[in-house]
Length: 91
Image (cartoon, rainbow, N blue to C red; front, side, top):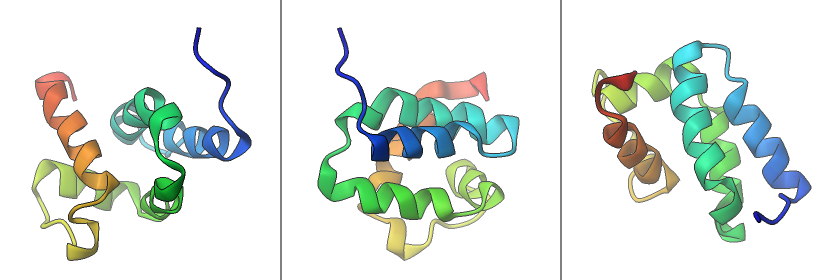
């Protein structure tokens, strides 16, 4: 059985699954639903910052329509990108 999420992870998960666009809810929300419990405490600030980004920007970065800003290279965004690529054509 999965351990319950702490309040911060619950808030991150809520923000990730209530983005405002169905596509972002599916991709970003899906990633954080799968990953929230395993995100190291040291990366929670990174998760919050990523969720502060606009849906359209995140989706454009994931789809390659815009280059990913340098600040997101080597971060939790890389895990989100890998999750998105694993989805294939489901989006």
